[in-house]
Length: 167
Image (cartoon, rainbow, N blue to C red; front, side):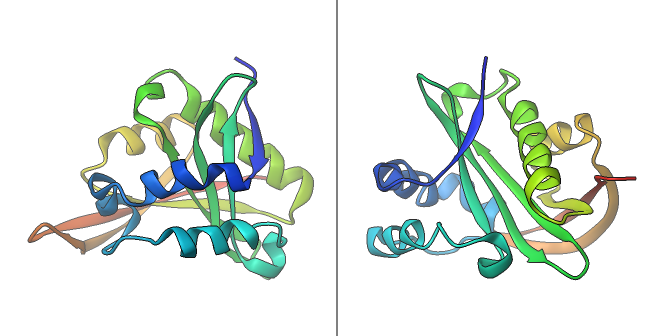
């Protein structure tokens, strides 16, 4: 499988709308209300902005046949050279190694194009698949935020994972 990362295109609006408004994912993204197509269209229109300027970037994980999901860099800190990373693989493509390949691609991307020393991920303690993905790809659990996420009348811990890129 020859995966690549690409910038958002206007044609991604529908799948992005469906993904962002999937309430089953909100616990993982700290989302509490739906996104409008208008808001997402504006986000796509501004996605050409550089990560240094915009502090975030969303890329599509794809090959010649399919789009498999999205990978985000967010809260980019140019001084400390770090950013958060988030990933969503569309359900029908999960457990096929796409997440691991995508993390490798984003790491290569930032090492080649962005002054970056480390990536981190904030993961809900009940997101076992994501915890496994990041651990398998060299991210170390470095902290726990107790009762950090309130969702469906229950509190969840949030785990902080970190990977130093250029030791």
